Amino acid sequence: MTRSMSSFDKAMALFGALVAQDGVFESDAMSVQLGVPESTLYRHLNALHSAGLICRSKRGRYLPNPVFLKKLEGFTPHAVLSEIVRPILEQLSVALETTTHFGILENDMVTYLAKAVFEGEEVFTREKGQLEAYCSAIGKVLLSHMTVDERQAYITSGPFPKLTDKTITDPAEIERELHRTRIRGFGVDDGEVHNALYCIAVPVFTSRGMVVGAISSSSSQRWASPKEQRDRLIQLNGVAQSISSTLGAGA
Amino acid sequence: MTRSMSSFDKAMALFGALVAQDGVFESDAMSVQLGVPESTLYRHLNALHSAGLICRSKRGRYLPNPVFLKKLEGFTPHAVLSEIVRPILEQLSVALETTTHFGILENDMVTYLAKAVFEGEEVFTREKGQLEAYCSAIGKVLLSHMTVDERQAYITSGPFPKLTDKTITDPAEIERELHRTRIRGFGVDDGEVHNALYCIAVPVFTSRGMVVGAISSSSSQRWASPKEQRDRLIQLNGVAQSISSTLGAGA
DNA sequence: CCAATTGCTATCACAATGTGATAAATGGAG
DNA sequence: CTCCATTTATCACATTGTGATAGCAATTGG
Image 1: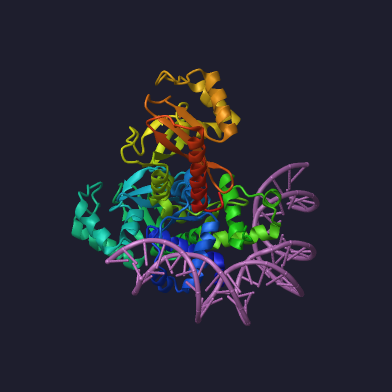
Image 2 (image 1 turned 60 degrees about the vertical axis):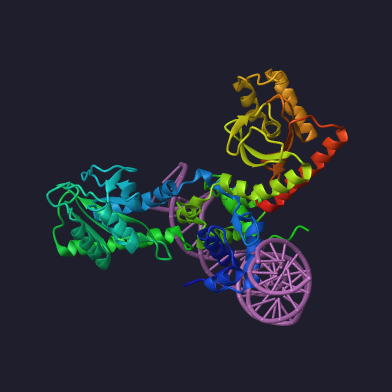
C-alpha cells in the first residue's frame, strides 16, 4: 500500500528538512538524517533549485525561493484547512446527529476553523471564534499532545477561570486531566465550558504523526449510554483519519 | 544549456498553475495550457499530493497543503530577497564605487530591501524604507513594467508631490517618462527625489520574465561622461542577471 | 431516475531519468 | 598556501516516468 517514494517525495523531504533548519544544509549530516547519499542530495538540491522552490544564498545555505513564496501569499493554513475540513465535518454531523467542530491551537487558545450545525442542536460557538483550551474537549486533546515543555509552560501560565461548576481550575488537576486525555486518546468536556454543553474530541494527525487539530462532537445533553459514546468515538476517529488522508503525506 | 525538464519541474509547473487559478483544475484546459497529456497530469497531481504539496478539496479542486504552508510561515519574500541580494549588492557597490539599492514595488511605493553603502557616498535612504515611485529610478523601472491597466490606475491616482525643482509631477509627463524608461530598459532619477542624488536603475527579472524588483546605483553627483553611465548600466544589468539566476527557474 | 459529461484510476511496453560510488574541482577559513 | 567542506562531473545500471487507451466513479442536467 505504501507506494515507493518517487524522486519527488525524496526531494520534498529535503526541502522540508531545509526549511526546518532555516536553510542550513550540511551534506554529511543531512545524508544520515534523510538516509540519502550525498551525491543524490546535491542532485535533489539542483532539482529544487531549477524547479523554483529554493534559491542559493551563500555556501551551504538554501532558502525558499521568494518568488515561490509570493505565489503562496494568498493561501493561509487557516483558510485551506477550513475549506478542506468543512464538507467532511458536515457529513459527520449528519451521521452523529450532533453539532461538530474542527479546532486548532493558537496562542494557547482553541480556534474553531469549521463548524457543522446539527439542526436543533444549536451551539454558541462560531467559526474563527476562540475558546479556552483547558476546559474544552478539543483544547484538552491539543494540549495533551504538546511537548512536555510546552505543556509545562501552559500549566504555569494560568489563570484558569471557572466557567461552570464543573470546570477544572486547579493546575495540578488540569495536568492530570490532560494526561488522562493523552492516554485514552480522546478528550471530554463534561459541561466544563457551559452548563448545557457536552463534547468529546479526537486528534487529527498528519501522516507523520504530528497533530494538526482536533474534531469534536457537541451535544446539549449528556450521552445516554457508554455504548453510544464508544460509537461516536469510532466515527470521530474514522473522520479524523479521513481528514489526515485528504491532507496527504509529507508533513 | 537548458537542462531537460525533470518530472519535478513539470509537476511544479502544474503546482504553479494550480495556485495561480486558486486551486481549480480542469484537466483538458490544463493539458493544453501546460502541454502535458491528461494522464500525466493526474500522475503529477498524485505526486504533488503524496509529496505533501497539495491536498484534495472537492472534485477538480486542489489546494496547497496547509501543513506545508505552515512550514513556510517563517519565511517572507522580503526577508529572503533581502538576504539573497545583499551580498551581491555589496560587490556591485565596490565595483561601481557608488551606493547601490535593491527595491520592490509595494502599494505603489518603492520599498528598499537592501542597500550597500559606498564609503563616503552616504545616502539618506534606509532599508525597509519607502520612497515615492514616480520620481525615483527604481520606481520608474518598476512602474514601467506594470500592465497597462495597473499603470493607468497609478497615473490617475496622484497626487505627485514636487520633491525638487526637477521632479516630474504632470501625469502625462510621468507617463511619457515611464514609456521612455520601458523602451530603453533603465530608469534615471536626475535629482528628482533629492537635490544631490542621481540614480540609474535596471529591472531584475525572474527566469520567466516577470519583474521581481530593480537595482540602482546612486551618486551624489551627476555622472561625468556618457561612457561612464554606459559602463554602469552594463554592470548593473550583469548583476541583475546574476540575481535572476540565483533565484532559479520556475516563476 | 437515467443518460451524458467530466473527473479520476489502472494498465501496458518503452524510453527517459534518477541512482549511488567515485573522483575531481571549487571556494572559504585560518 | 593548505586544509576542509561544499559542490560538480561521470559512469553503468535499474528504477521511474511516459503517453495511449480503456474503464471506473461521481456529478450534472433533463
